[in-house]
Length: 241
Image (cartoon, rainbow, N blue to C red; front, side, top):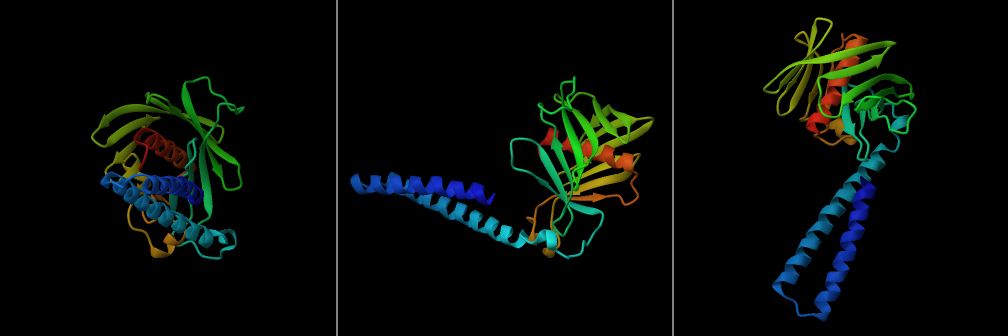
């Protein structure tokens, strides 16, 4: 992000230079002044963003050697990478990445014959834990491949802020409102995503409105994979939490 805003600063700076030459060689009108003020405002905005992310980078440079304790072992911060492909990372509160969710590229050996997006969940060491097939056009079946098992979540019904899927006589549901998404199994919360205030010491590495993922400490492994699949489905469908 620091590099993104630096590039914006260069572009806006060049534009400002061109405007100055125009104002020197031509009569200055109110229109020219408005353009110059707008460009100046953008310069201040992008510079403040560049400075902010430079500060964040300097604070995060020694994270891997950090001895800071994790405050909540069942809470993680969810960041979506700003690149063309879909990629999510779940971080502990001390800034260490625990899991990564990414879309498998078409050129990969892991190909699917279905018209769907294929995602993989990786541990911090790079090992793949599970694969998820999410239909491109929001069809009725979500597929999970994990622990040598293949599971199919079948869409049942949809209501206001709620969607229900079934698997082996069990119901898995998405309960969504403006700031909270709950992923449930037969009414029991497996995973919850919430946007809001976070402890101040978490903000050394994360922006204040970073989504916080809270995982039920008693969740079984396969149910955890199902909850991750529903989380990806939500982000693909709603584009944000």
